Amino acid sequence: MTDSKVTADLSALDDLALVRSFVDGERAAFDTIVARHQRGVYQVCYRFVRNHEDAADLAQDVFVRAFKGLKAFKGDAKLSTWLHRVAVNVCLNRAALVRPGIEPLDAARHVDERSDDAFGMVARGERAADVRRAIAQLPAKQRATVMLRVYQELSHEEIAAILGGTVGAAKANFFHALGNLKRMLES
Amino acid sequence: MTTPVRLHLSEDERVDAIEGTLSAPRRAHLHDCVECRQEVAALQQVWDGLAVDARIDVPEPPPVFWDQLQARVGRAVDTRTAAWWSGARGWVSLAAAAALLLVVSWGVVPRTPVADVVVSDADAVVETEAIGDTAQWQFVSDMLASLEDDAAREVLRPSTGSFDGALATLTASEREAFARLLQAELTEGSE
Image (cartoon, rainbow over all chains, first blue to last red; front, side, top):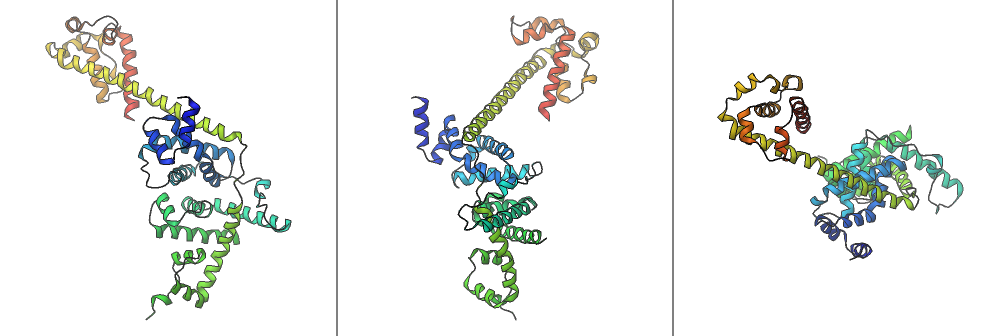
């Protein structure tokens, strides 16, 4: 079978079948997993570090860890959730090393084009940049909670599964994160 | 006595309130309680600010980036896999050497007085103190030293080209260098 035929066949598989194929020794299945999920993983990483270079490095680390850890993936959660969990752990572990960057002005003002008027657009963009700067100052676990809840739109149950702990603890983390953000934004 | 419904909203419930999942009885409390309403309104403002930011997409890298990232991941995985195999081969070699020395120790050396041999042949005594004196190393160095015994050498004379053959034909300085390499491997492996 040709490489392109193998790739096409693998692309037709769902995530769980790809993982099984990879665990059975089909290396190309892992490449397909990377191709399918790299954008989501990169975006999770980018939300943490706010710069392209570090996000790319982190995304690479995430997949290297996934390569070693996929044998343990049982399919209880979606593969994307599992990869997000790996990504968050990688980002949290690197939090001490990688300081979230302050985005250039253009990026800070990179706002939703659907906004109604120019002034409102800029104001919202600046407000969003303030929010991001404040998020960057949060303790790591609160920051992770905000990232997962607001940007990845995960439920508190999913966040608890990723970060460890109970749903109540995840909610409490989120509550304290909002409180801290409020204080920072007011100052 | 205050009923539970009259209690202020807990942290969880305030989160539920801004996310629109608060239960009906607690919504009623929120409606009646100025303090809780102010608390929730303040959190709601932050939530709204986050929602605005969440609508802003992560800047999209150039299209070529995705191929590059996939290639980087492939290279990183290959490098680590190769490193793992290299390490595994090293340990297999080390285990083979240790097994050989074990055979020498238990099968042959007891027939010759090891202590006498080591003491009488100064050239064969490896400088363990200069290298370190872990139990592992002591074991290996003792075995190497015992190979100096002519009787043992005669009994153990290996076939040409084999690992143990090469080991037995080492000079004292070569043996010492080999010993240092083994010691380095053992030290590294035990860390």
